[in-house]
Amino acid sequence: MPDRPFLPPAAFGTVLGHAPGGVPVYSSDYDSVNRAELPNRAAFRHYVDGIFMGYKWQCVEFARRWLYRTQGRIFGDVAMAYDIFQLRSLRDMASGEELPLRSFRNGAKRWPEPGALLIWNEGGEFVVTGHVAVVTEVFPDRVRCVEQNVDNRPWPEGRAYSRELTATVGHDGSYWIECTFGDATILGWVIQTDDDTHAETIVDADPRLFNLAARHVDAQGREGQVWLNPAVPEEAAFMAKMGGCKIAGIPAHETLYFRVGETAERELKRATNELHAMFMHATNAVLEDDDLLRRFNLPPVLWPRLRRSWEGRRSRMITGRFDFSLSERGLKVYEYNADSASCHMECGKVQCAWAHHYGCEDGRCSGKELIPDLVEAWRTAGVDGVLHIMRDHDAEETYHALFMKSAIEAAGIPCKVITGVSGLRWDGEGRVVDADGVPISWVWKTWAWETVIDQIRAECADDEEDLRLHRSRDPGRPPRLADVLLRPEVKVFEPLWTLIPSNKAILPILWSMYPNHPYLLDTRFDLDDDLREKGYVTKPIVGRCGANVALFDADSGLIGETDGRFADRNQIFQQLFPLPRIDGEYVQIGTFSVGGRYAGASARVDASPIITTDSDLLPLRVVEDAEILQP
Image 1 (cartoon, one colour):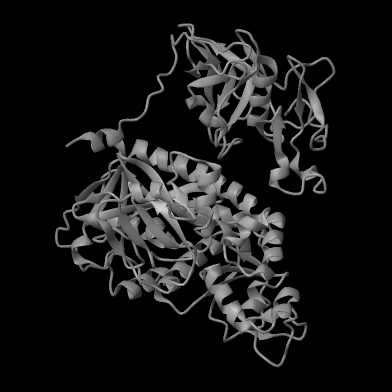
Image 2 (tube, rainbow, N blue to C red):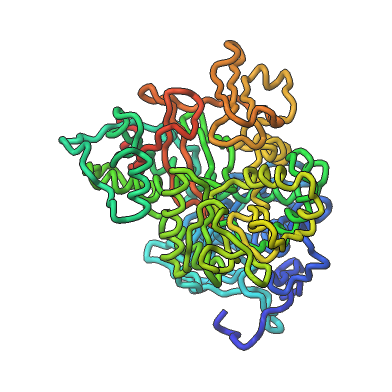
């Protein structure tokens, strides 16, 4: 806040002032949190009269608490503050009555009023989440509000509001509010009222807008030409994997692409952001409960390391991928590849280059922001030395590693690629170093943690204490994978805790935490009659690439299955929700999260209803909604 630049932020939980009705506003200066009092995310959950208000001391928590304390009303849980603008009702906790909410866009002719909720859009100061404040006073030239999680300094004596925002009245009576942050925008305000005059019409989108459409480009004889640059390492590696300059393994797919509408893209973005937050909440729940953690079949010797990885966030998650079914039937997530997601190069570079070569100007590329977002994520990741990319001997991992290397280096981080562990050795100080003698302190890996753990299980079966205490300074043998990735001084992306959201055992836990959530499928640890009647899918809890999956229709029985190396793993049972079939191909949408936010999307197709690592990944173009509704 520019009016009091000399005041330092108050410690977390300090009362900054009192809103009308005597409701306290607290500092949310997270840098000053007492970790002994608030050791984990669950400790931040705040309840009043047994009702969940939100997380201490975020903006949504205050808005819900103020409404409850002053009016006895509660609005429903939201993933992001800006989602409040889409709510349609409040609940009166005494009577149970649902009371109508109306949303008014900034510039509406109905002005805000005391008690209205002022909503900021995602972006700038309020990136990812948006923001909400409670309006306390309204004037023709300004509006006052109370809020949390913006300015963490105590209010001046005698003041009863957090901020004062400039307002302007248009010649037609419209009311416009300007944010004090130049990079943030106010979406509008929400009022509990029966009167919908000048209100936004909040309606469900036409289901047809969620359908995908297949199209072919006119190749005009351009097939077989070189449209990737073989002088660029990752592009050369991609061509080597594909056996030439082509996007698909099946020749008929080379000119095929899919279209998605802008409404559907917004829903994919919303779902990606919301589901990431939900998976993180579920991860926290698992790591606080031994009975839940036991479901994941992870060696108990690793449990303390998992918890330290989560609590300390020694290295943050950079990127992951959600797999979705998208159609007029709805948007449903199958799983979150939070550990070792792939296909970034296809989404962020290959599909855009394909469109340029074939002159596809239909809409825009769905992956054009992925590379800039990855570069920014690496720039802010805190890496202060050489980052080693560790990969296996695999053609796909080769171009994936080189693609990520280019993003890392664009962020100004020196980077080296290591294939396998045969070139590693110990130095005189007991550190693991690469073939050039550079100590390994920062790692990004293409290996899944489960693959690492399988190797660790085999290597350490008779030496559990070695794994526990990590007595790995042994000049009598070369370094093992465990000696690199589990050393306390080595910071790994994606961190060890991503084992939890990537393991499919998280899916039944999510369903129990968020039953009937619109993005989730009913998923259980045990098969019951309810799932048999719906149809179901069996999945190994640590399977990869579509391996060892079986689909059972309620009427037809087994309708598809894949083999693989995970047949001996525990399974979960997920409600059958088939992929849409378009022009003979089953189509799955993958969305990429970077830093927990949506960063792009791509389409993967197969003639089989189960997508595997061999399924082609094809271009996805975002077009105007009207284009989707045209026959």
